[in-house]
Length: 334
Image 1 (cartoon, rainbow, N blue to C red):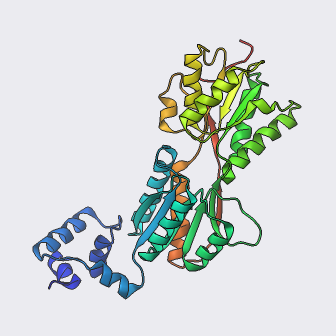
Image 2 (image 1 turned 60 degrees about the vertical axis):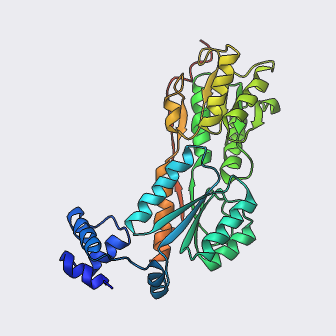
Image 3 (image 1 turned 180 degrees about the vertical axis):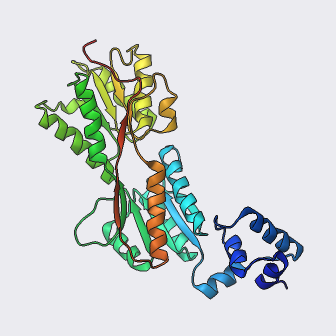
């Protein structure tokens, strides 16, 4: 039976190069990779991953649990995680929890029982006690998680409060004061941060809070559509609607089209995330850009450092965001 040494000898490369090819590391030169593949084929070489993991105590596998695959935000985040892990020769297993805590627990247990070296949990539904226990058992990074004193979790967040404030300031500069806000589900740190920023802006600018202008959605376009229909029945109507993600904002645009409310001439609409679809809808959506891919690469980088037991300089990272102004917001006085 052919060995790694046999492959290296036939390919004319080092053992390290063969190992890097087997582990999928992107640092190998294409010509060297091709030599290794040819040698493996000629020798009918098959690497025993189980034996390798028993020898090294690692599987080179990592699990990523996201709340949904429907929202385009998460595939781009997952791509960032995958690209960064691949450079380190680590394989990614992607799990979709459907925002179901029990389903998330089942995936976490399945990943750990199969020897996953670490986990990245996005908008986790697990309790703090469960997370503390997991943190003792495995390498773990949390994305979109509220920090509390006394824990040592590795966390990647974006500055959601600042993002909403920037969006509200833009609407304010265009003369809007009757601004409705469609939030996401209240089971995530980002949701509470965005509502807090919305209410903080109103208070700072001496604008009374109209409770009917604040509606909870579930991040789906249908919930944005329903929320907009409710808002269109109010007197006075809002002059602007700020949705906590682009998908809900697109639902608002759809409802406005059916109600024959012209955007942005009679109603300004702002989204959040800057998914690709936001630039393709009509009118093109003004939104808050989130560094989706970079969130994934940062989470993966922190996890890799933990797996390699490198000195951790950053265990908690907050990424900045900015406004992308397109066609769906204009002056309320026009």
